[in-house]
Image 1 (cartoon, rainbow, N blue to C red):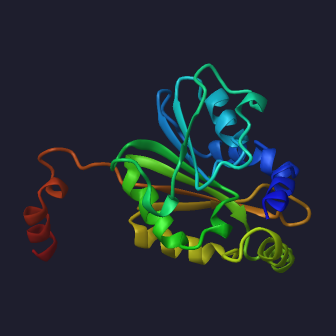
Image 2 (cartoon, rainbow, N blue to C red):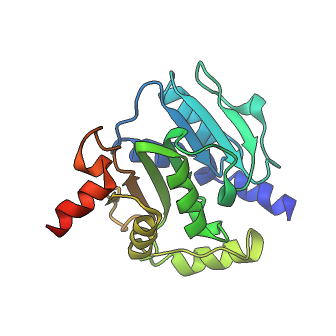
Length: 218
């Protein structure tokens, strides 16, 4: 199994920064942001984030770093930190990050809804989740699932965008948007950007639950 994981980790999609780059086009990330890259794997995505966000603090998390080779990475001036941990119970305090990324990871998670809830928990108000994965409407969905289940993870399942949106809403995200890269073949990947609502201004009705409740019922 480890040998198969290493083989798949060498595939171009595992090292490609394009999935991150396209998603970041649809986001505003503060210069000194704290970024969590869930499912960091070999670390190429985390290293890319540290290059394009040179003032940011990037943390790459994975359940196991069997294939991580830091010496092969080309990080930015502030290299990413790598932490081993379970995305279903992130080892971070609430509201610690400005951006959470899930790139080609969502399909192999055994409890994806729990991971979305955890991503929401560790995001600061106004923060964003960037999710990029196989589009569940694409004709390659079934072959992809078969190969992944046979060689990578029995938990592999590809979901349609309607499921992504519903789960993101259930987790608490206020704004959810989808993006596709133009392609004559329909595009294999789908991007979702979900934002956590901004904290209400002090003194506003939203910051005073009882007052807000009274206003809504008036």
